[in-house]
Image (cartoon, rainbow, N blue to C red):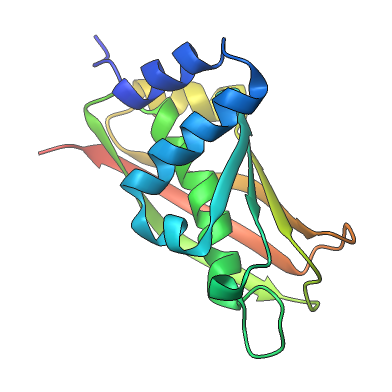
Length: 162
């Protein structure tokens, strides 16, 4: 029998709230748990359990020397978006771990960045039934001009909590 995941319970509960409130609550909880996300200003725009949408505004604390979003902030955005999705789909007795991040920076980012991550039904079933394993979480990061400045591949693993 799967152990209840408190984060998933929270997300399911607040998904019944108005969208403006839901986004603020999820963002607050996420930033409370992931301190660096609070520093850079990552926002959780939407999640339904299968997809998640996060935004990184081009603010001073997250900028590089040329005034665009720093490469490390782009990596944090993609890692946060995919990790949250994996985290809410695992049973409460499993621990998500990033196994590999492949990031290819192909264009200069302009303006704010948006990351959209998604899981397939098969990946969700695998995470809920296997004691340990890994999944390649699809994520697309775009800037305000709808250009994809970074191509990301995120491999997440999970193991039993000790």
